[in-house]
Each structure stands twice: as structure tokens, then as C-alpha cells.
Image 1 (cartoon, rainbow, N blue to C red):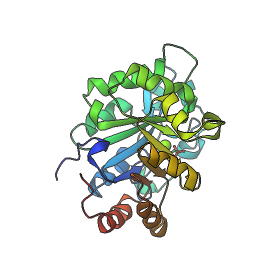
Image 2: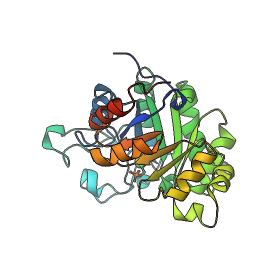
Image 3: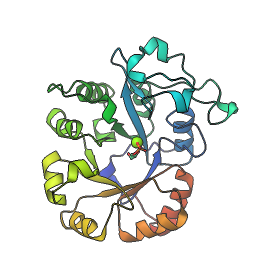
Image 4: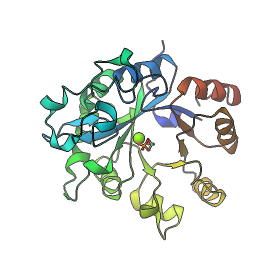
Length: 263
Ligand code: G3P
Ligand code: MG
């Protein structure tokens, strides 16, 4: 298979596997990521939190109850302890034994294969002006020479502000939230955080916001869309990509609507 090692700019439209192919495999696991590659996704979105001993790990929830059935927090566990957590059975007993990957493992795997959207979760971010977690993520991206093949994003204003300061060469995406956008126009938000893209839900992408984004030529990515109808509607609006738990379905729709998705 042709490796999908492009940056986001090479695509007219991006098929993004949300937490991997998470409709088919347990989210944010290697099973899910491998399935996304098999299904032909252009990019994989994943979530990052930090362990007690400061290791970035790929998981969405700070508390392990939903995914591993234990009432423990990621930030209270060392990587050695977390390594014993099992995040496959909740989805299907077929996936028993699935581990929480470290960001380092995923970057090492992805460098030959696919572009990543690394979403730094707010729970991991602190007021530390040095930007501890952001710097750690960036160091890893650089270590694996993935600067042109990742997209950093966060809902957190502190993380967003630090991404471009620490790594101007890595593209970043603003994840829309009411808090960080309050009282600001789209150009002000994009300018304040110095982001390259704008990520939002379909519902928050009002006509007015979309027009403002088009005026400043800021690409828009929409999450999380699993219905064919909604996919088609958004593609027709001219957005730049969709996050879906069903990348196979999204690819099928996108290939039909935009036959040549690579510029
Ligand atoms: O990055 C898009 C989307 O993943 C944001 O929401 O909660 O699924 O991480 P969430
Ligand atoms: Mg996410």
C-alpha cells in the first residue's frame, strides 16, 4: 500500500479516522489505528494525556472507568502501572488484552504510514509557562521527524498558545469552544492562537462562522460525523476534512464527491 505520508496541505479533503477506526475497534488502540490504515484513512486523530511520571499516553478519558473498568486517573498512575490496564474488553471480548499505547509508540509506528492529529486533552495541560506537556509532545514529534505529518490541536487555550511558540514548523488546529472564542471574531481567534486550521462540530459551524473562515481561507475540519447524509452535506459546503469513527464510509462518500482528493 502507498504510504499516506502527506501533510494536511496536500489534501483537498481529509478522511480522518476519529480515535482510529473506532466504530470497528476499541478507540485509541493499535487495533483501531491499524484498521484505519487498512480502510484508507488519510489521517488518524488521537487523544493524549499524561501519566504521573510524565509520559504522554494515547487515551481519551482521564478516568479509567469507561475503558478499563477501574476508578483510577491516568495522572495518578505511573506508566508501569498503566501498562497493566486493559482497554479492549469494554468494546468486545475479542479485543481483550489491548493496551493503552504511548505517544512515542504511535509516532514510531505512524512514521512509515500515516499522518496524525494529536489532540492534547485539557486535563494534561497546566499553567506552567514553560509549557511542559506541549514541549514533551513536540520533542517526540521532532524525534520521529514527523513535523510535516502531524497536526497539533487542543480545546485548551494555554496549549493552543504554546504550540506555535514552541514549534512554528508544526501545523496546529483550533478546537472550537465557547470559552476560548467568547467575544471574538473568527479572524481574532485564528490570529490569537496562530493556528492553521479550525476544528468544530457541525452544529457549531454556523453559516456566519463558515463564511468568516472562508474569507480568511482557514481550512475547516468537522467532528464527529458518521452519517452518510451529513458527510455529503458538509463536503458540498466545501470543508477541508471530516473526523469519523467510520473512515471506510467517509472515504467512500468523499471519493465519490471529490474524486481527486490529493491536490
Ligand atoms: O479532535 C476532534 C475531537 O476528537 C474532539 O473531541 O472528545 O472526541 O476528543 P473528543
Ligand atoms: Mg479527540
